[in-house]
Image (cartoon, rainbow, N blue to C red):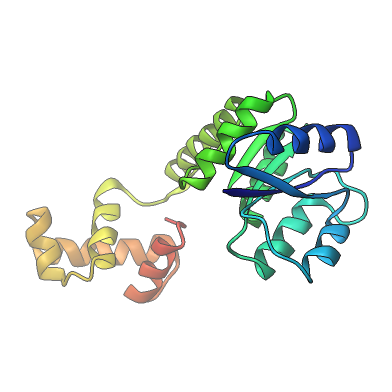
Length: 210
């Protein structure tokens, strides 16, 4: 049985989704609230749903702030955003806050059900428009990183070796160059990145800054 809750201030939408889910086999949607505050007040003394369908434009606390608080208090709950908004900022703010799915409000009821089932199996349901924006976001970020990196291809390869914990000799063997050439490239890496040691290079690499 998948236990579902919904936080949505539009009563017609809220009741429509709740009624539909309660008619489905292996679904129960007993939790239905018009705000995050109502949900938190009620849930403090009751059981938790497995999945929470959540609007973003709510009265009082916003949906994104609500996602953060709910995930901090109840980390096992999966949250699907259910919103009219499809702008990149809200999408990524929601995902960063802890949402594991994002469906637009024009999603047919049957697809909402399928999305919840996908979520319960470890997937992340997203409306096609949302998935496209996620892909575009990562594509743009990768291009920006490539454009912004001051390092050459060989210097990047040496950084990978440093991150892998290789000595200068092992890096030289991997790249089929001399140790002196490795040292020359590392001096250039330090200069370009404005750092003074290997640890700083590794740290920048792990943070995605190279």
